[in-house]
Length: 351
Image (cartoon, rainbow, N blue to C red; front, side):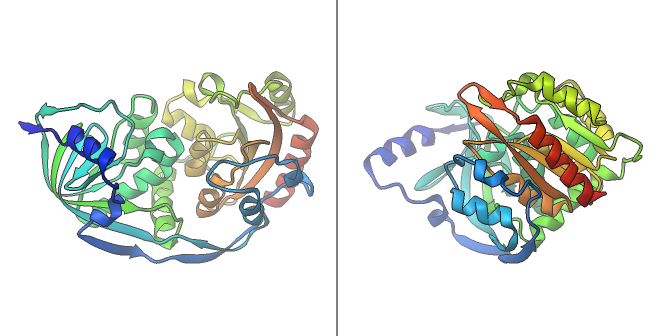
């Protein structure tokens, strides 16, 4: 049993003193994999497609996104590890003396009186991004779990009821991790693994290899991933019925991952050569399952353009293409003619 007022105390103190960056509280900083410069291929799109972009996500800019779309030499961040002593994990937040860091969005208790899991050596595999976005969990968080095993550390993740496919993917990948609400950890590693450097790519490909060993390669070659009921607000497609009818006429099979098990999703995607989907975590299903040499075509909101999935596609040996959809506050309108021309262009490249 553990009794702690750390959640209350650390937050009170942060209101009255300068909050020290959590990385500065580490007792050791390690570089597990160096920065990696790699030649990336240009995105597949119509010649004037990027001119239709009106805005980007807050963390990037049109200039940066234009450079990524063009391809060329790109530098990926190193994998860094920070070691902490006597850490306390409570409700998705890690506390050490002098500070705290959130790794999952959870309701926070003011005072902790609970049974705690005890660990000598562990690696936190979760972060806020992987807690919020299924794709980050599948492609990045699980790659950290492989790293933890390689380092001889217990992987600690955070389960999320919204991840309806979590248990199925864990079964297919033969991966498990502890997900305690409360834990005391003597020697904790937190890893910054954002860069798709050479080692991150190696671990991601191991995830793909584990999945593809189940592949029979008998499924359809053209897939449209419908977001259905799980569409993020603002990403619903106004003319979805017209678009799906057009894709169907072109030979696309339309699947709804939210209504399928991971085994069924993987079975549908394992032989896919081209996958079309609205930009977002649904693309992760294809990134871990598709045949190497295939291509993703992301339907991009004109006001929130992002190439976040391009590096993952490159790591998987896939081409990344896109078409820009006109966005309003309620959703997206896809130019069907431009989508068809983009698919025709992609088909010639990956044939």
